[in-house]
Length: 275
Image (cartoon, rainbow, N blue to C red):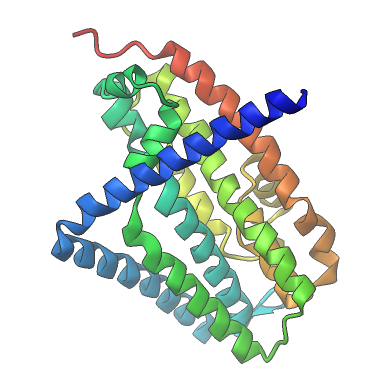
C-alpha cells in the first residue's frame, strides 16, 4: 500500500468514526428524552449487579476459600468482569436483538439501503448509555477488592490491564456477533444467547476450579476465561498465569476475524421478509 492509498484508507476510517459518534449522539438524545425510564433502567441494572455480589457473599459465608482463592480474589474477578461486560453492553448490546428485531422481522432492509456499513449503523442505533452504571460498579468493586487485599498495583500491571480489558470486551463482542450471525441461517427469533449468558457467568470465577474439559472450553472454544480471570491474575501478581493472560489480545484478534467473516457471509444470506 503506497502513501496515497494509506491516506485515503485513514481518511475513510476517520469518516466512519465520525459517523459512528454522530449516531451515538443522536441515540443519547433520544434516550435522555425519557429520563425517568433512563433512571429506572440504570437502577435495575445496578440492583442486579449487587444481587450477584450478595450471592458471592452467601457462598463464602459457607466456604472461606475456593481452590486457593478467597472472597476478595473473586470479588476482583467479578469487578473486572462487570467492567468488561459494561463496555460490551454499552456498544454491542444491539446484537441481542439482531435475530428477532432485524433478521426475522426484516428491519435490516433500511440499514442495507444506507451508504454506511450495516454493523456500524446497528452499533450506533443500539448505543446503550444506561449501562455506564455497570462500568462504575466494576471500577468500584475492583477498587474495593484491591484495597481489602492490601495490594499495590504497579504501572506495568496497570498498563497490561488497560490492554487486556479492551481485548476482553472485543472477545465478548466477537463471540456474540458469531452467535447472532448464525440467525441468518437458522432464522431463530431468540438466537443462541440463552446458551452464552450462563457461560459468561462462569468467567467470573477462577477457571482453575473447573474440570479440564471446561477449562479448555472456556479458554479456546468460547474464550470467556480472558474476560475476567486472566486480567485479574495480572493485578494479583499471579505470575503462573501471565503467559496465558498475554495472549488475550491475540485471541481477541482471531475471534474478531472469525466474527467478521461469519457476519459478512450471513449478511449475504439475508432475504428480508418477502413482503
